[in-house]
Figure 1 (tube, rainbow, N blue to C red):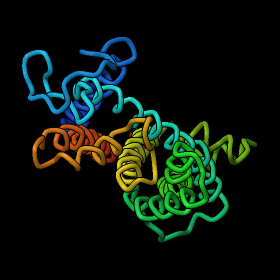
Figure 2 (spheres, rainbow, N blue to C red):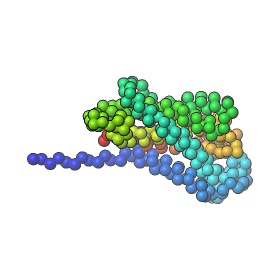
Figure 3 (cartoon, one colour):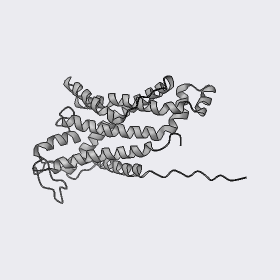
Figure 4 (cartoon, one colour):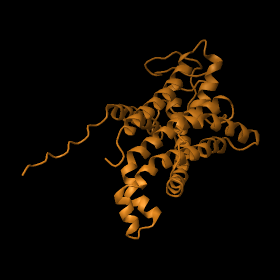
Length: 269
């Protein structure tokens, strides 16, 4: 008689840890803006140089850039999050149903594929005179739902034919209930990776639409609008472009990095 060694617990992927820490830092700074910013909304000397009191200087109308950056990051994150949640709540059930009804498929895609149709949808909706928030929401949610359903279907289909799922169905469990109870829990890392990727692309969509003048417009504020306004003074104050650009790029890379690490987790492990 031999004793089997207990299975080793999977080590935390460094990509997930680093990406999560960086993303949480951005989210924390954005949430802090609800209660505190270094200088609030008061107007100061326009285009002031960075100093000990104004860490990133001021913009063309005298707003403290650090305070503004914290506030607009929260706006962009909220818009991206609502669009992403809508995509997941619709796309994952549709993908599960497709995996049950029509499991055979060679169609593959990636969350980044939603960027071109998202921009096109934003242009069309903006041309119809829709509100900026609705433009961004539809630009994120519509293609995001399609991408989420395709990815969810591809991930769910192989697990649907495993023995324990078949046994549950033979015992009388309905297909969607079997998927919810026996398939989806094993795919939580994959679905979490999908959510992070969609959120990252949603941030890019907001920044792109607002920068192009199709999204948030004054007196509103977002990272994309901040980039748009800063390009007029980029030659004299390049930090006004670099700061919001670094937040967009850093947040997107952090989310994508964490998603890549989560996708390395085996389904059902």
